[in-house]
Length: 157
Image (tube, rainbow, N blue to C red; front, top):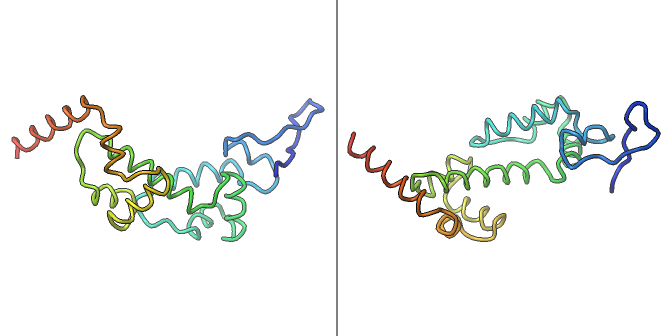
């Protein structure tokens, strides 16, 4: 359901909230811009740790139930779903990095409990396993650079 927002100063026409979560705060029911920025920063800086909805609600200075409702309105999904998507995005970046990082290490760096948890969530959100996705999207040049860097690191130790 789209909510009409307050018209910009000096205009007669109402406008719909933007898809950008920072802009959605204009409508009643969503998070304020400062809350969105605070929450996004906190999630990005702490995605590898256990993030509780109650902690995010405290950052936004809202009750847990009100925060969950406002977050869903602002982001179009519940807080847990958003955090899991951010974790999988971090996993994708790690999988494409120059090094051949073991999946268990990728899982831990993304705040997931183990490799099975990573594989289950990755498959749910991306549609294929992390290993298959890495094989498909890693370029031969990236692999060659990663292998050369790993050999250099091994020779210096």
